[in-house]
Length: 279
Length: 268
Figure 1 (cartoon, rainbow over the protein chains, first blue to last red):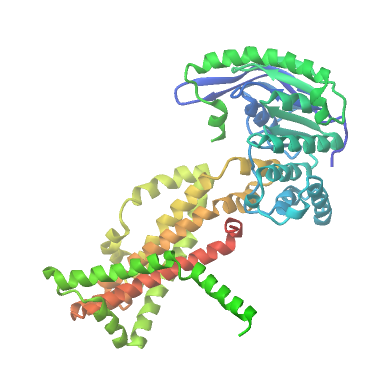
Figure 2 (cartoon, rainbow over the protein chains, first blue to last red):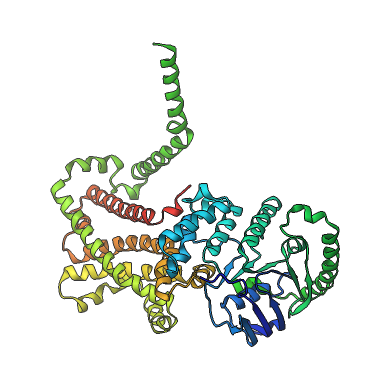
């Protein structure tokens, strides 16, 4: 297993990605370059429909760039791999497996650890995310927040070098969301892996991030990179610090420009790129 | 009688009132009663329906049934349905999986399937004599044919409608293409595969009855047809009822098997 802290750097080099619809070609990413630093939590934020899910898909290896390179530790990404695991928008747990079996799925698929080892890890992780009493429940028996936590555990047990979080807390109510963010931070601070977290919520972004990448509206590229050097471990009190408020003001200003552009563009009855790709 | 006994009894009646003797049950019984009533009225008061046996006549016919004969016929039809259905499953399931899972198989097979499918299975009856000499084989072929397309179609559809995130997640976990089929695609498509099987078993009953009526080689379809030729219409209606019951039984059977394999869907 990989446990070196120095691996897990993802580099986007001048990446362009377009999708063909029946009549037109829509450019989603336009000469996009950035670095997801190893061992850090990078948050990607941008207006909705700006191609954030596409970036996740490119790193996960579900899609291939039309131009440019996606590099993982210097090597181009050619396909999916357990080194790079995604926690999807809404729940993508296997509904026919119990919570426990979902978490065991990855280790048993690859045989990287023995069943006993995997079992031990699974129990430990599920305890850590507060699901120890729900091991043998099916996903439909869990609440939205529990499902998301089970999914976190399902990915983390494989000890991925890079975790890709695709708006994982979208659709949760404010209270649950806050709790999830705290759970997640605790796991990140313990795991030392590389994390890329995609969101469209500015509070969430700053609360979690080491580094904040702000995207432009589509065709999107990197608009701005902000370092978030709030002290760790963080808790909700960070949200009242002066430093946080300053960061938020800066980020909001940048985002606002993009939002204005986006609302002008959407007047032209564009298709929703993100939902178009998911289907 | 002590007070606690009294309490227990009153609790019992409360439960009965809540779960059995409530308005929902009454309405359900009413539905059946109204149906029988409508039937009786039609037969009694509308001239052209005078020939049709009344519910009581059909009920009386129940006691004239030769149980040995009727169970033999039920068994014959059942056997034909089961053999046809199982062959349909054995061929239809892999074919549906192939068309749904492999693009090449889809291009190779789907157009042909799509071309033949709109022909109603019953329209095949005259042609079956060319395929098989034996009447038994002809009947089984027709039941197989009835089951075949619903199974192929629903398996195919179930597979193509699997949420893309599930195989993607599994791909990242390092599953091979075959492992993916077994561990992700088929479980995810299972609900629709079972829907296909339920539709299929309904059509096999349709086919077996039609085939037996024409073939005169025993079975419930033949039994009904025979009583038609000797003008014993209460028996005809009774036979129809038995066929319906058999079909319903098969459908329930598939539900039971489906629930066994899909426990995760029946939690609530």
